[in-house]
Amino acid sequence: MDRKALFFDIDGTLLSEETKQIPESAKNALKEARKNGHLVFINSGRSYILVKPIMEQIEADGCLCGCGTCIVVGGKIAYSYHIPHERGDEIKRSLLAHEMDGVLEGVDGCYFRREHSWMPFMENMRRSIARQGAMSSYFWEDDCYEYDKFCAVADEASDKEGFFETIREDFTIIDRGNNFYECVPKGHSKATAIQWVLDRYGLTLDDAWVFGDSTNDLPMFEFARHSVLMGKHDAELEPYATFVTKTVEEDGIAWAMKELGIIER
Picture 1: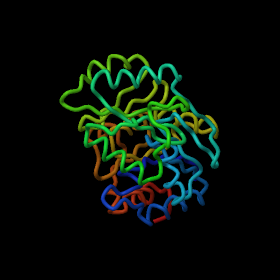
Picture 2: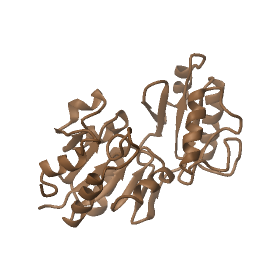
Picture 3: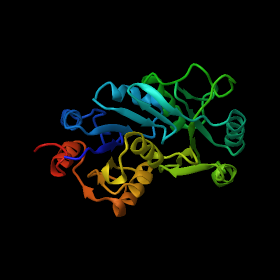
């Protein structure tokens, strides 16, 4: 069988959002795919520090993190992009000026404001990131770090459209629902990360297979010719799916890989 490059989203694809676990069937499927000579990559919107715990549970050739802003191969960072420092400071000021809050995401940690947020959503996120060991000891107000992308959160008092106008020129804004927005530097996406891998290994787009479920997977679904959509998914991906599998909890990853002949039944 010709060598394939397989790209997997995490949340809702490899990782069950119900149990917060990766099914053993998926772990075994990825392991078998690599034994068959295929390449396996995580392709996530998560920053590298949040992907590391997943990489410890599976066998993979590398991970594409932060929507293509950080690429790790063989445990070493092969590509990394940081928002220019002055621009990063402007974004922080603009968020607050438009009555918004958010989290800044870097390779080494996630950065929150020193002051606790007036938004319950943000405080829940702060606790979740802290539980995962990914909250930096530095805060927004410190001047000794770089970040690669960020997530913005709005409420009824926010001027989110006013804020978006300040970043549209150099950021792609992904609406994740419930006034939660993922903001990625233009020129970076899950699709650009895939192209980087294909170029590195001398493969073509016909060799790439992507697996995902949510709106931040849209760039790789639009880009790829072989797109596997999880049983539970965002409808925006449906026009681009070439195969629809079962849910994570129904062993959808292993089932799809068997049906598609990537691993044996």
